[in-house]
Length: 256
Ligand code: 13P
Image (cartoon, rainbow, N blue to C red):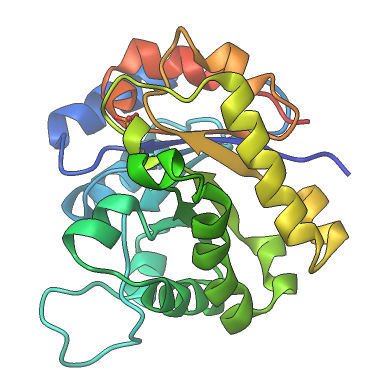
């Protein structure tokens, strides 16, 4: 079965109404290849407006709205948190979970990440599970151990079969926002490891899962990255704030 490519825009704490307007008008003319989904993840306050504008402007059905985080709790006294049900009401389809910025600045552990993945799956939303090693971990040849330690708690909590409904984004921390992209060979080698790691638990699920690369992806390097056998698209930070560049990245992706 064909594997879908996904290009997801993680705006982080950037952009607002003006960027929603610009991205929607830019994406009205985007040319997408077969088997590609595009996901735009603005900050929470702009999800509703993005959803409305995508509908009003009749954008390609492959263009979806995503959130950057979610609570693992269903509802209750969790001031400042956002539940999966609230996201559902806003027609959100994807949720970024376990981004390295959340793991490092907000101390999210892999067990908390697994709880959020579980809540997201229960709500019928697609989690984009982020994993990745730091610069020192790569230097110490700990990359595979770190990735395994980030994946295993999720496998233990939701079961490998649930990975049929999960997207994984491999984002080496040292490549995020630094302009230092992993070489396409290095990214491919790591993606291959991730697929093989999952295949030990379920080969069928591993063969079908979309594995995105993130970390300084731009219009110039995306073609080579997306051409790699185990890279099924990207999670784009800085370049997703520049609409023409982002459109070019979206047009480059194709399913495998
Ligand atoms: P940059 O593309 O800005 O390096 O960010 C990558 C990222 O963290 C996406 O989630």
